[in-house]
Image 1: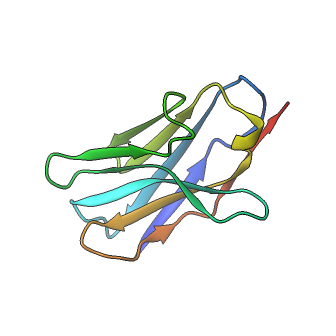
Image 2 (image 1 turned 180 degrees about the vertical axis):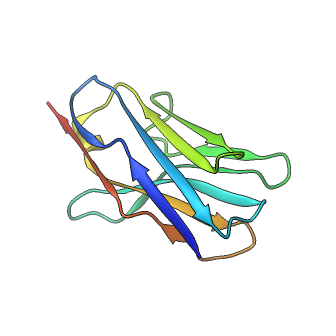
Length: 119
């Protein structure tokens, strides 16, 4: 079992910044994937950004957040942070932290944290 605890959501004006943090605990495997998804009302959950340490490692971002969001990972602390800059109203959603053992198809989800960007 893996537990994910998120923090850092809130209300911000368009153009502002927020930082989301997620700490993983429990049965953490050394090769894994962590990241953030989001779900806006009436829409499907979508990938925001994720990072993997398999092979040479890789980080991917949704096209909609490239250049504005930055994902960072601390493997010693098992944390993943999402720095969100130049926020737009369309970034409003519940953001979920995600962890998966690299070789598994299914992973674990955090409880979600609300991000609201006002225009």
